[in-house]
Image (cartoon, rainbow, N blue to C red):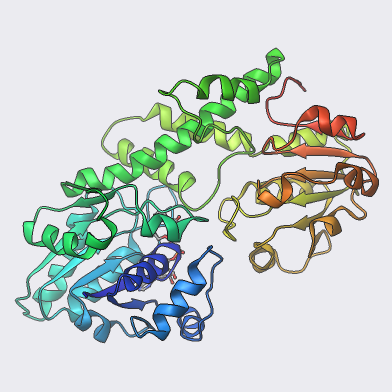
Amino acid sequence: MMKVTIFGTGYVGLVTGACLAEMGNHVVCVDIDTAKVERLKRGEIPIFEPGLESIVRRNHAGGRLDFTTDAAPAIAHAEVVFIAVGTPPDEDGSADLQYVLAVAGTIGRHLDRYAVVVNKSTVPVGTADRVREAVAVELAARHAAVEFDVVSNPEFLKEGAAVDDCLRPDRIIVGASSTRAVAVLRKLYAPFNRNHDRMVVMDERSAELTKYAANAMLATKISFMNEIANIAERVGADVELVRQGIGSDPRIGYHFIYPGAGYGGSCFPKDVQALERTAHSYGYEARLLGAVEAVNRQQKTKLFELISYHFNGALAGKTIALWGLAFKPNTDDMREASSRQLMEALWSVGAKVRAFDPEAREETHRLYGDRDDLVLCEHASDALHGADVLAVVTEWKAFRSPDFAAIRAALAKPAIFDGRNLYEPATVEEAGLAYYGIGRGRSL
Ligand code: NAD
């Protein structure tokens, strides 16, 4: 059993805290958001993440997982202190480190014995040094001779499968220059590391870059396939067949080569941009990363363009049913979601939206409030009533095999805009609906 404190109870901090508690450690989660901490204490989970509620409740009830806004006792408690706060984009796209450095300062103000400070937030190369400095400055200010180490331990969990990813990580990246700190992390991660050694130990800078490189590679795969889709629709090819054709090459593989309505979420857009900014600040223009972003920006306008084409640009007064609001299935996260761009574009030309999402309705309401041109529906079928056409934006499983006849009957101008290529065009067309997909042999 180890004593662990985690700053930040968002997707990363809360999941990490719950999983470390599940392995028998005593975990204290600290957040500055009082309302969030109060909810967590009552057993309410502020985010939707499969499997998270039960693991949080079980470990909270078992006394292994506590929540607080009080940093001082939480730091005094810990052998290992995680930083898992947000690193949103700054005005110029670089990562804003104010929350990370604020936590580092807090740690320095309260640390009174050796601890390992572990940075889990996604941060630019060199941040471990800045965290070390921020802790040291505060220790020096109170003349405290306390030893500590800073380790970079980027997180690779996927929203929607975060608990599973955390309990069964593909790899555990540990960037450290202290053998003492590596030994502490080996002990902490031993229960996650039994089947084979997943821990890759490296220097801090390489660890920090590993996280950005991973996300940039994944974003590149998506933009690459969207580029191929855009070519496919112009040359009369079906990108879904092309996808299967190239995926069969094991050097390419089937994973993560789905074309669609663009990538969103809290990580890919900001991390690609931040890596580009880092490269720029070192005098290197990362042209590939710039292109990945540009393709994605354009792709996020795709559904609107298709809908606008269908209506000859006359969208004022039209009602669009939307299935899927979250940036991907199995989450309620709406950060940078393609649905937002689509809805905002539709509203700007006087169209209305009737939307359904299994989990993200509350978050959508929090973002947009009550407005005449948005109805958040309780069921997928409700979204169709009074709508002209249907756009599918998120590939929730529940949308995969709908009753096309019922969709046709409900819509005034039966057409499906399939932003994730979920359906066979022929099946949809046989049911009497017009079909628009992404890169499926039809050029505008
Ligand atoms: P989040 O926005 O969901 O949560 C961040 C939390 O930190 C919030 O609850 C906020 O109140 C809290 N916080 C801010 N300042 C604080 C302080 N001084 N003390 C205590 N708490 C404070 O963020 P997230 O999605 O969990 O991401 C956290 C980091 O992990 C980011 O750097 C992100 O890029 C990275 N990351 C995220 C994911 C993901 O899928 N969300 C995956 C891997 C890595």
